[in-house]
Structures are given as C-alpha cells and as structure tokens.
Length: 310
Image (cartoon, rainbow, N blue to C red; front, side, top):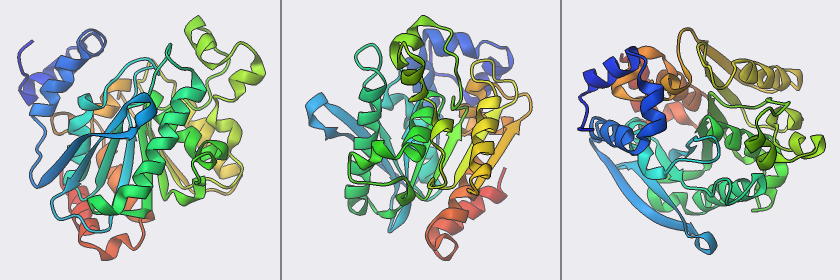
C-alpha cells in the first residue's frame, strides 16, 4: 500500500474499510498516518530503554522549547496482544505540537505475559517518566496517563488499583489525571478463551483486571471518552467507571460521541480525522483544567489556542 493522502484516509474510514486495514496492515496504515501529521517545532527522542531486563523502550515527543510542560504517558491499544510504539508517532507529535511532553512506551503482551506482566511494564514506564521528565522539559509533578482501548485499560488500572504504582514507589494521587479513549473498564464475564487465559480462570482472578472494582476515592481526575458506535468496547464501560467515580465523590468527565467507532475515536486525534469528534479539544481542555498552574504558562496558552481552532 502506498502512502495515503489525508483525504484518502478520510475516504477509507467513510467507506467502512478501516477496521480491515487496522487488522491486516496496521504498520502500513500508521506509517501513512505518521507522514501526514504535522511535526512543526516538535523534537523526538526514540528508542530509550526504560526496562533493560526485558529490553523495553519508549519514545519521547516534546515541544522544541518545552520547560516544565505537562507530561502525558500514552499507552496504545491492541487487545493486549498487538501494537508497537513506532506506530503512534503521529499521536505523540500531535500532542507535543500542543505544548505537551509525550512518552509512548512499549510493553510486553500476551501470550508472552499476562496481566501482571504488562501492568508491571506500564508502571515501570510511568516511574521512569517521572524520574526523567525534567531532562526533557517536562514537569514530573504534572503527569497524566492516557490510553486507547487496551492501553486505556492499563492506564485506568494504574489510576485505580494503587498496588501497581506502589510497586515502583508511586501513588495514583501523584497523577494529575487519566484520559481514557474507548477503554474496557468493566467487562466481566469474559466470553473469549484468550481473555480467560490472559486474566485468569477463576472469578477472583478476573476481578483483578477490572478498574471499576478498585475505585475508592483516591483516584486522580478522569476524562473518559467513548464512541457511540463502538462495536468492540461497549460505551457502558466508560459510563460504569464514571458512575463509580461519582459515587466516591471523584472528579470525572465522560463524553460519548455519536456515530464514532472504536478506531474512529483514536483517529479523531489526528488531523485527517479531526472532524469525527472533539476528542483532541476535550483532552487538551481536561489537561488545562487539571495541570499545575496551567493557565499561567505559555504551553497552556498554546493548548487553549488549539481548543479554539477546528
């Protein structure tokens, strides 16, 4: 497949061919999307090893003159079985273009590991980011988690089940916020054998995989975004987690975008598909609202400008 023009990408989505493309040729598709994403004034540092034992690396995207900028750790999806950080250069560059330092880590996947393995990797990535944020123009105390699909599940578990971050010397309350796109947060009973093998064969084991079960009033603020036409992750997942947050008096916003699919929600962050949903604008607004002294900084001004633009 040759590189696609932004309009061709939009036609692909409208034609209903995107799910096929994402399952059969993810690398080619995301490579094409990477080529049409503006990277003006964005600097990248790729392939930084954060977990030498398992040779796990991350990529960093930042504004050219970042200084104490908010930091976002972005976990990609792929059913806990697929995906590479390199495919999400476009996401890192998009967010960095709006004044954020963005970290995109890899993590081990099933069947190499199960829940404990990829959660360990994710927690290590967050701890590494907090330790090294200053070196890349980020504020270690202004740290957000963000993810799509399985990546949103991973981020939500880090934000709700304190033990994962405690293993690396952190607490969920040290996070400024969590942004989840089309995440599975409340998805029992498990109906597919692959997920039983991944999350456990007993009910008690499976409960450990459900972020909604761990909400106790000690979570960071959350922004839960969901496509109304998502056939892979039901919108009820976001609504259930939002309800649990509200029940415990926590700050949470949830948005369901009418007519938007599972992949479409993620792609609405990109320039070619931004007309599909206001996910980018809503994400930047959430970060502005919960960032440390955000509205007094140049980076926050850049994000406010982005919210005012199409």
